[in-house]
Amino acid sequence: MAYDKFNILTSTAYPLPTENVDTDQIIPARFLKATERVDFDVNFFRDWRYNSDGTPKADFPLNKEIYAGSKILVGGRNFGSGSSREHAAWSVYDFGLRCVISSAFADIFKNNCLNVGVLPVQVSAKFADTLFAAIMADPKTEINVDLPNQKVTLLATGESESFVINTYKKDNMLNGFDDIDYLKNIENEITAFAKTRPF
Image 1: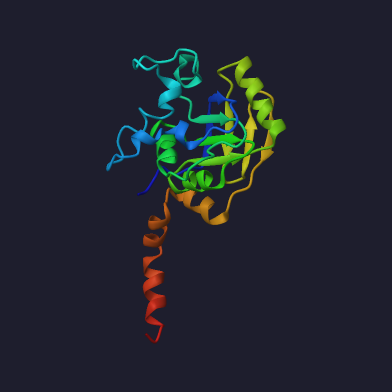
Image 2: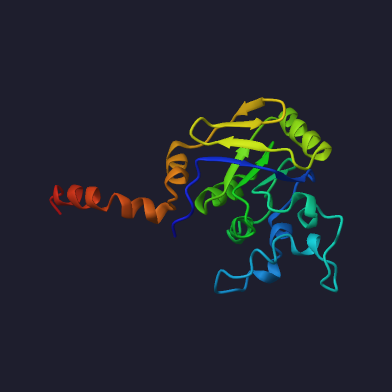
């Protein structure tokens, strides 16, 4: 499945400084029985976003109008820990987020995000705190995420930090490819190589 190409993103951000946010909070296990990829946006952080009667929790950042429309989420340390469910990354993307910034990610969640068109940007704890402080002070604070140059910048102050990403995954993000799209894109090269094999 092809995704939107990721190049340079400038957006406001949802702040979620809670540490050790696990995948069962991102998308609760009871919603994993679906055979089709539907309503993952609705059930993204379902138990944190809604009361038991289905009404939104007004104090939860993802429900606050002041952050509405943000394409970036700045999360606490060890974001995406817990089980390896790919559905967690799906729900991030389907909610409309294209980038999650944190000082530390669970490896499997990080890779799942890269596979579905969400850019996980790991920064230092100090820079993450700087971003949180800026967003809390002004919800309209914008963050620039430059994938080609692998840099994230707080536009209000110009403070920035570089981030690391696997070259293969970076190229896929820039082209809007998942692993299957990548292989389809080089199908002719694969066919040509296969013809040189004696078997």
